[in-house]
Length: 260
Image (cartoon, rainbow, N blue to C red):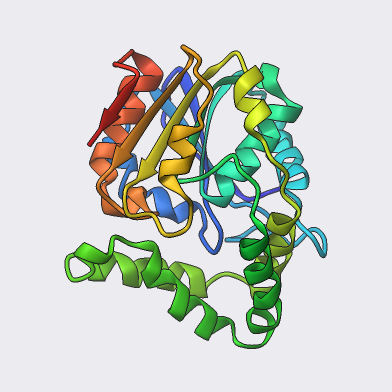
């Protein structure tokens, strides 16, 4: 079973899925700001943190099934599911396979679109460097995920993100990259899911196309979106604001769209 931590005694269960080259520790800045009404279930996805590598290719569907095993083990039937980046891809696969298990789905600096050909080729070209020069791969890539206008302010957070990335098993990372290449379009999940859908995105996100994501969201009353003045890592760049949105949206209601 995947490694996980459960914190708090709130009645509402919030499951947190980290992104690529991350682990369950990434939520430490945001956690103090999350409502006490939540009980948090933080999970290490396969090949990350303390969770084992499960296959040569970690498809989003395989990882979603492993997340479901954790929820079943904890006897959790209805949860709020939030996924950052790759964790968002896993969350979409989970929503497609187990829609009745969700009270809400939050795409946290993530996308429902598959990789375009350019992105797929970039990922495929990265296979060798992840295997042979993982430290270089992480050191080059991690700083680009933060708001370029605030690099000096965010220096400590960038170092934290890099240390987290370097702690990842490179073969676990490789299995997930191969899985991300195989991702399919999941817009239909957003079009058909009856649960609340929350999208939190960054204005300066270089990893996903924020404007395209927001512009093409289905026009449904159960979907709300926010654009923050940050890069790809709101949990490190704007933890209190992200937590405030989550608290308010998942426990109350706000206007449909808001730019912060």
